[in-house]
Length: 392
Image (cartoon, rainbow, N blue to C red; front, side, top):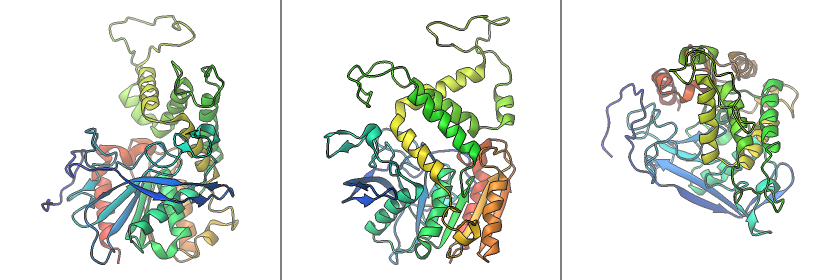
């Protein structure tokens, strides 16, 4: 691969080129709940070359609805979800680092999850899939890293749920991580976060569409996914900022040629939506149904609810006592889901036990999803690149 000069990328351009998803297979794992889950399949992608000493590996950890395809172009022509950050000459430079990204346990993009076949029934697990934790996800990732022959990662990096996993890696496997970048994350989910997830799951549970045979899986039913669509709408609102919504939508009406309101709710109990923001959310919900599994949504949001690094020790600093990694914490000024105060709690706890931690709040207007918005990538590129180069 030719060396690409370093520049400040702001767009996804597929510069890395074509990538192919790979799979690793394991006998299984005993979950934190005590349930044995196996066999296991882990879907993953890699980018760049592993150094002879195997010391340049970076594990990228995705958020709730992410997958293993983080950069480049897949077999369907789809760009990776963090393509603006990862590639030749980019913030995570694939000329320098060997990058790994896997679909998390419980997902629906190749790794064992609710859509996978339950060997005991020869049918998809569906809602019979056992509940998991962020710790279970990380232990499965550790199995993959070991499978690839890597003893110690140069870095683990992720935003939102990915940031939770990066913290979990630092606490659970301190000797296997040189550094971690924790973006827009928290060490324990707040009551507000739990509430949003619970409402989203209940939107799915209340979906009036059910299979005629009463089965948990609804793959063969028509007009499915209304509940998941609503759950996504609820979640997506929390990812945006008020500033972004005002600038993008304001109170503009969807039908631009209309002079005034329709004074109608629609038909068959489905409100069509008159405002542009309503149309946008409807699109987000319907497109999400096409690419994500509702039972994976249930399992993963429940795992996020369970995440609490203070649970075992009673104090966050005690949980961080064994951490060996150099840590960078990044927050966004407009993030009201996991606000800067939550990042500062992580920083203060690490400093209390004398750990090597850096912190920056980026003044970006895009809300919780700032780390995924291309316009915010140049700021993050400079910070992440400099941090990674300073890790020894």
